[in-house]
Length: 106
Length: 301
Image 1 (cartoon, each protein chain N blue to C red):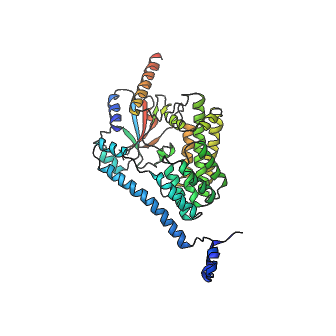
Image 2 (cartoon, rainbow over the protein chains, first blue to last red):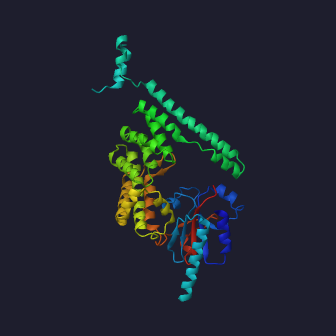
Image 3 (tube, rainbow over the protein chains, first blue to last red):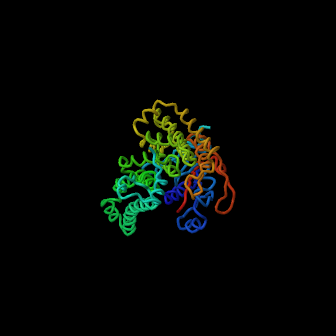
């Protein structure tokens, strides 16, 4: 998961795209891994899987992913393709293309 | 005529019966016998646990994929081969701790797949002998996945048990089942309409009988029943722990399930999140409006 997220963030660094995390590691673990794993994206820090954000969003499995379009609408959740990394990338590319198309027609 | 075993035992201990009468004595569960029975059950469970321990030791020792594959090909520990032995013990010592331990263990292991037929007695015993005891409280979670059998079990515990924790958990898991039923009914009537890929896995594991019923059910009605059951959970059972010792309570879990049903479906406007990043800076999810956002609940672990 993490290597793919890293390459997606890198690949789309000049696009209107953001990967936002909700991280449930304890702080020590997070700090010790972040550099080595090349994590560059921003996260809401929760410290535990039972933090307020995963609890409110009813997250029971990790990772859980929501894909939200430029207007703020939830477009995908629970992508569980046989290749979920690929499914995530395709969904993002489709939403970016949709956004450009709408921008051009306005 | 009903015998009260304890008073009979006490009487028997005070005045030993004449030798000729001994054969007439009913089997009496003394405390020693009950403790011994529980030990016997634990010994069977320990046999399986030793097998599991042995297997994971070998798994950890394996260094290549090939070695691991070979290990799995040789067979994984199978709990169901102990079910018959536990059934014999449980039936010999009905309504004791030993029986409850044997039956709950069998149910929990059958839930991992395999031995479903050999485990039917265990569920029946829990529902018949232990419906009003603390022991029944472990059953709802083990019967939480959506199928005809589990709906019956959860409804029976929810409406018949006197045990508050069991009622709470049966209501909580039944509420979640109903929400899933609502989504599944919509998806079955109009494939692709919910856009939730994980739902497809849940639908695949529903039995045909229930699937047929869901096809002709009103999705909104199912969702509403689920919501009202979860609302009831929040009111009546907020402080009941779902997994004892892990601090997860029915109230916030039911609230989360309701929030997801009402605000986190595909096509819903994403709720905002406000929190603090690793640098200690407060930010919002809506700061990224105008961009495509992957919101990723993650961790290294």
